[in-house]
Length: 356
Image (cartoon, rainbow, N blue to C red):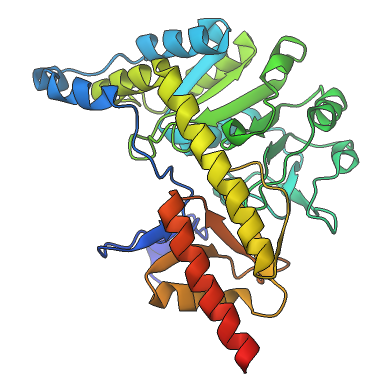
């Protein structure tokens, strides 16, 4: 090791899902929306004056903040926008988890939480999900330095009831509680109404999943005005210009096309429920996902074997080689035809095993 390396902060980074460059594959591994964003995006792109890109964007992201506030029925000073929900969450870790006490999050959850905790030198404790992979609210009632969890959870897709979410907040009013609602639009209940009741609650959502804007990197937080003020203070101490002018405008247009948004959600939920029935027929077990993916295991064929065989067939799903979940696959819900191809491939894989 070189002398200068002794002072380098060394962390194990988050590992994102594969982004294969091959043509003709079926990509069901990163929870992207299979449908394009609102058709109004194309109209905007055709008529955009690109000369505006020579100027710095609005640091306050005012037009999008106003649109979000209007859409969600809250005040504009209750909204914070960042470069995808990952950027928003990282800013939250830096801003709110500095007490020196352990923050709490589930042991099976979005693995970036542990990465950020280590990166920012925040002590943490992972609370084990129960045997049914459910978050146990009572495990979060003790002394801590803050709490974060996704709802629905990832990668399980399981929703924690709003009553249980409130129990966690109610028992932790001395710290900030963050509910990561990246997948909430696919059939779960948002805890957003609780921000008027609890000034320590922060809700984080994203345009990446339900609004088909993963490539634009738009995330946002909603909460008490003081929480949002502290987040903005941190942002302006780090990077004033987080969202570029074009994506700011595109996100606003996408947000306003509520009809297209709801139509896409209905198609994805319908395909998800159909896929559940078909997976059951093939001998797969899974929980009642309220996200745009299914977390499934087969009774007789190992997850890694299925994952590798599907990959050979040009179908990508997510496999986690981690304790407790190394026999599960996270399968993103694609278009109906893509899911039919997936089911046919799975039928062949399971069928071959039965013949052996």
